[in-house]
Figure 1 (cartoon, rainbow, N blue to C red):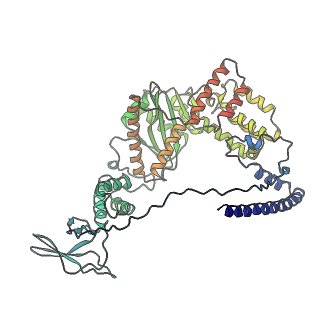
Figure 2 (cartoon, rainbow, N blue to C red):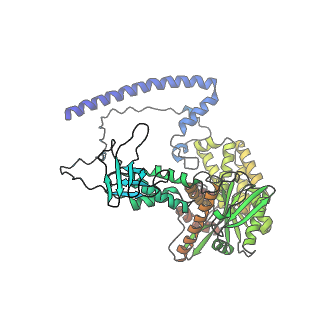
Figure 3 (cartoon, helix red, strand yellow):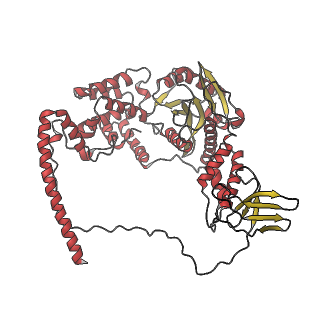
Length: 572
């Protein structure tokens, strides 16, 4: 074995030397080609330098300390040599450990004596709804003829290619097999397949909006045994069940001029059907949800699009926290299927929600995305003095899109000083609103001319704008700064519903979510449920202590921005 290992190691060492030599020759060729390219096309060299210098950069929000820490404005990254290191030390290839493959059990030596065949009639078990006779071996039979005192069954395998001659006669004494044998093997899972299909189809007809997968799996767990030789294909049964109950479901609306079939809606769940200038919006909630919303002091509003199909285009939801002691949980309280997102649409929806709450609300603040129509509607319905806060995550997204649009994304990922500067800009919301303008102007004073486009956008959109004044996007001192809980709920709903399910099925799913929300309220009441915080979020909560230092004047604005920019990585 030692001799063989030495021989292998010598081969590996020789191969490494050959690769190193080839790499050296190739490097020389690339270097010559690069010299030509520098003369002919500087832009191409800039692209090459970007590709070579971004190795190891995880994402545009993450740290680039290992890649950009030593690069200055004067550095020409395209001139950094890529040195190939040839290692001649021998090594051994590790042996990968794999689990043993599962094997089929071998036949036993013992002989299984013939057991008496047991027959069972399954009423309506055939595909056409006729009676079907099943035996304990795996054969099925259909009625051939009925007599006064007996019934003749013959094998159900009767098609153009195969006509099985096997028969069974049923009389008052039981079942008697004929003298002709089957000309095909049995299917051991056939009886269980028929029974599961029949029971699941019956359950599905009573629960037309419940997922077929759950119904079939529940029935299968009752019917199947671990000792069964073969189990049926449950995916096939799910498709059969869905086809059988398809005609029981209402037709999906093709336009907004449809009659809502309330018989297919959960009792009392529809709270409003609003029509505005040819558009239509449906509001759903339970009485318990509205009762909680009435006393909520902060509303979180956001929308999602993936679960909605035409003629609607958006599902808006209103959320709030329920709390007892240190236990807290954000839950959805109102769902709105919307076919438009103009200011007047939001106004009509919010006014209807207000009427549902008997205009007795305790809300003090709203947290929403930076959607101008929504902000205008909130101020129209709840007054110009309504306290509205933008989501810090969406603020960071909006600014980052401009970083990309102004051609600074590559520089952000490759030059440390640009990375640090933009990180500080993205963390401006963490300063007090009164301090943000002065800090921003000081950052403008030190910025190179290539940042003019980005800084001009920030000034016109976030400082001069009357829609989003600075206090509306400053999150200084706020422990909950984003709509991430709402968006997390949207992701879970998208996972459950899939892409754009039928409208009535989506409404049923929203009703289920309402029930889940009320169960969560009970858990919070019993101090058994808390808002889930990822490790990264917990780390961020620890940074709130830095705000206390800032209040006491122990940390400068620049230092606070620098600290936040290194800890708060995702603008979320």
